[in-house]
Image (cartoon, rainbow, N blue to C red; front, side, top):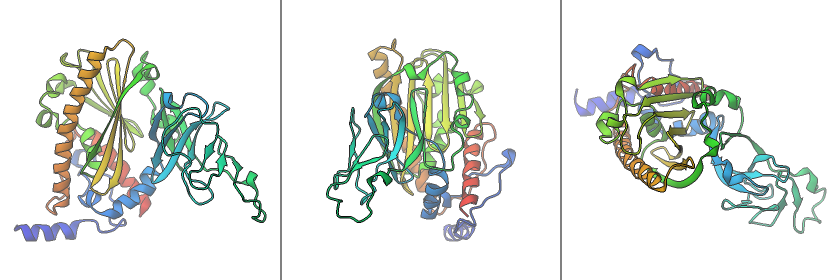
Amino acid sequence: MTGVSARHKFMNDAPRSLADAALEPQPPATALALPAACYAQPEFAVAERRTVFARNWQLVAHAAQVAGAGDHALAEIAGVPLLVVRGDDGELRALHNVCRHRAGPLAGCDGRGAKQLTCRYHGWRYALDGRLLGAPDMGRARDFDVASVRLPQAHVAEWQGLVFAALDDTPPFGEVVDGIDARLGAVSLADYRFDRHAGYEVACNWKVYVDNYLEGYHVGCVHPTLAPLLDDERYATTAARWASLQSSPLAGGGPYAQGEALYWWLYPNTMLNVLPGRLQTNRVTPLAVDRCRVDFDYFYAADVTAEACFEDQRFSDEVQVEDIGICEAVQRGLASGSYVAGRLNPRHESGLLHFHELLRAAYRTAA
């Protein structure tokens, strides 16, 4: 088949609408990956904002950022700006960071100890629970009732020192993290201290990065220094309703001296990398159909030395550079017009299939 006719066949076969994308569930033994159109056509990004991101829990802050009254952190879910804030009553809320007057922001950065929230556009003032306290020079507005104005709120949950938020129609948060506490045992991630943030902008669809995270199949080809530290024969993937876990004993070398590597993914875009004495949280945010941002935060147990932290982060940066290179190459392949959905490896890519099945269900909902 010539290149021109192959591209013509691809364009004819590719889903051109959300209705076409309502794909049937894939049996594990014969499963195909998602079609290239899901990674390259803008209508899928629009559908995902509504049916994937707006309806599921996402990591938005660490509890230490919002420990005291008035402490606040900025976040965004499905295009909605959020302000995660601890109230005077001790309650944690995820308020919409959008003034009810003319949509100005109430905060432009993370902060500590705010007494109230003031719109940066026209000075409307809100309590930490979202109630409007005052609106300058609005006395001439007929029937304007300050007490009737309140900032909308997203759902919020605090777990293991991490703060999650969701907009609407979400599964119960306990279902998302079901089984994780039991697997962690005596380890309390809430006791780990924050050390460093690192952000990467990657020229690929957000799903390409998540796909890559969800399988160890590529490790031997892409990560020459990581591969010897993991036990390929005992590398296992287990799936829950809204999450999956990849686990492997550590071979004992580099920053991973001994113990077990636990890589949790929480649908749709949160990763928790738990290794002895350390936690890396990883959030993947779509920026465009072919671009995403990956945010890493590093946390460590009290007995981990500064030298060990430095080596852990150096090694992680090295792995991320390798992942970014292959993800950007995959995105170019998906957008080329050449790719037709390929078969998945039943042993190594079961976590990837789990992700794709959740997405297929979301696409059917959108259609």
